Image 1: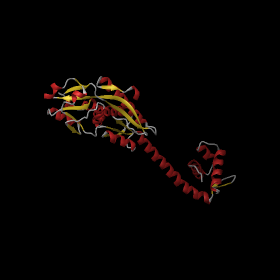
Image 2: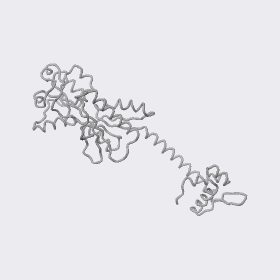
Image 3: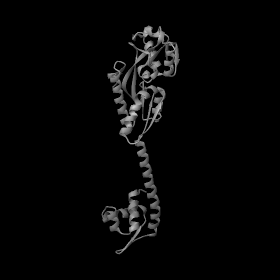
Image 4: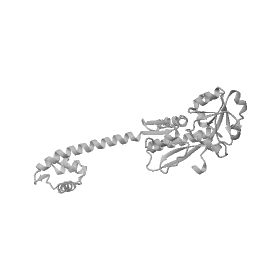
Length: 313
């Protein structure tokens, strides 16, 4: 049975006024249109709803029963619409982003500040986690988009490179004099290297760079947190190999020498989105802000942070 809520509203309005002319005027329609809508409803139900005479209009017994039911149906329908509207309004200001910690610290505070000015009371959730977990959260629909340093090889995901990040060497104390401001990968292997663990994208980039030269990358020490790496360097246990964006977030690098690896890899940084579906308005605004922040970083740190590769734009 195909009965629209609009038909039930017309019926309820007429059941209360019992006057076709007044009801039509109340509903901003003509009386013939209202009469036809009621006749169509009666035909659909197979039930007379009103007794019409030249002087009066009255509800039939079946019409009175339908009025009770229709009030409940229309009331639940209106309440459902209100819940849907409330949910849509909440969704319009909700945003969830995943990014690995050092990138989250560099990029996302500016993005969130911009959203606070552009959108009324945004509700933002940031997941600062490992690169692989960022991608997994996106695949699980837990986030609107992710910032990643490796383009995911998945047909359902799209990757837009924003910038490329150089790898640098941090040295201190007795090791500082042994590390020039520009050093090559082969020269680096003669130093006691401290790096992040194999789970990090930084380690994957460096390992691949040495593998391309037929050399096994074997650091002296591997740890999970960049702050720990810097603390070990300050104790002169070795020198650190880290991406430039990573050390930018660490105030503890003050006093350390930063050297460029002239033939080192460039770490890609980009936005990962799902190919299917359309981003929400707030997610689109956030991605535009991420792009703007990336451009500012490229201008502020020339030579260390490079523009996206033309092939990946």
